[in-house]
Length: 75
Image 1: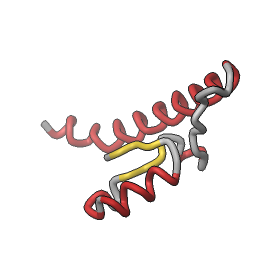
Image 2 (image 1 turned 90 degrees about the horizontal axis):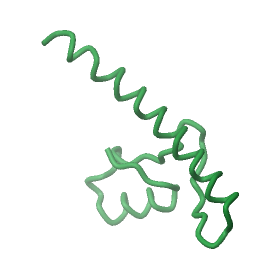
Image 3 (image 1 turned 135 degrees about the horizontal axis):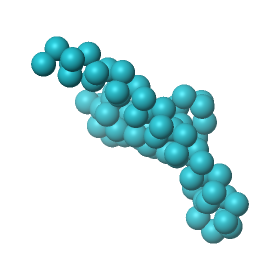
Image 4 (image 1 turned 90 degrees about the vertical axis):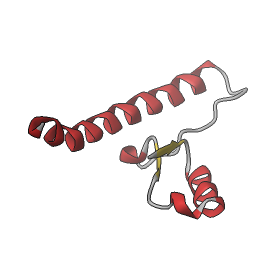
């Protein structure tokens, strides 16, 4: 699994490295949003991007735990 910030990065990776198709996802996919690059945009922009990253990471962690919990229980 490869997490990226936006659709442009996803498309680039899947185009340049076809074997990554189906393995590349936006970190804020559950929100259906790209994480904007806050470079030179001020503190508010950094805080906004951080919130999207935190929420996206939380969602991915929950999804991964749902997938891995059944395996852990059978061991």
